[in-house]
Length: 335
Image 1 (cartoon, one colour):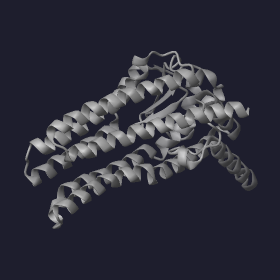
Image 2 (cartoon, rainbow, N blue to C red; image 1 turned 135 degrees about the horizontal axis):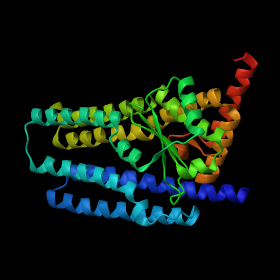
Image 3 (spheres, rainbow, N blue to C red; image 1 turned 180 degrees about the vertical axis):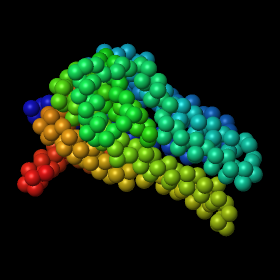
Image 4 (cartoon, rainbow, N blue to C red; image 1 turned 30 degrees about the vertical axis):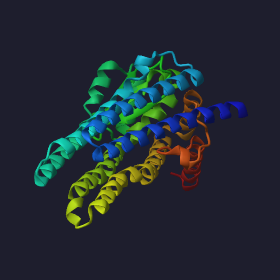
């Protein structure tokens, strides 16, 4: 048992470390590109893209070593294409910042026209429609049980899709889009859980929809980013010296990043506990606790993880403890 938990911890720490390195490199290169000359921006882009590719391959090797996934590197690396696209857009923005000398008010108008579009994309999440086409709908008897659960939780206009992830050995379920139209569960997770455990997972995701967690998360992420970019453009008008203005602009860009790695995970952990609470109420604590334990085993997630490593999710042991406390309170109060 100790050896298994140690293996989980080694795997988990390796994954989190790679994610942190990737995040820091992308944002640091973007910050450097804003103040670099055009030739150096191009060098930064290709260097950053190469590092993203290298880290993706390292991530793939970690998955092959610890979880013995069967997917090839091309399929595994698909999600990294999104990061590369985001990085490309950031560097392109930095390049235009140097090459195109636009009027400040036009820059502000352009910036404040982009963010409503980003809000719409998060709200509607067009990528979810593509995922839905790749997946399949639930079948009986689970389909009828999920419909009953949706009615009990007062969740409407939500479609649940099963994503073929057996070769990736991905044990996951997620709700996509602030509008809450789509819930996805991986085939690998689904076939390793019992019917009641699958219902507990569905109830957890339905709770995210019920409490609008994705929309709240998007607002928290995008509004500081929107304010930061506006302040970045307005910084030269604060009456500071050129050097102090440059330092202020760098500090401004780091504000949303710091929020993203400090306060935002705290808010996400709170959302996860709330979703667990609803799942335990509607499906039962035993099914949820059993599903969490299996999730730990399938995904090689250590049951005990400090907040430093836990980020957006509490540790499995903390989640189980909270569910048991809730059940005891409900039993004592007769609810």
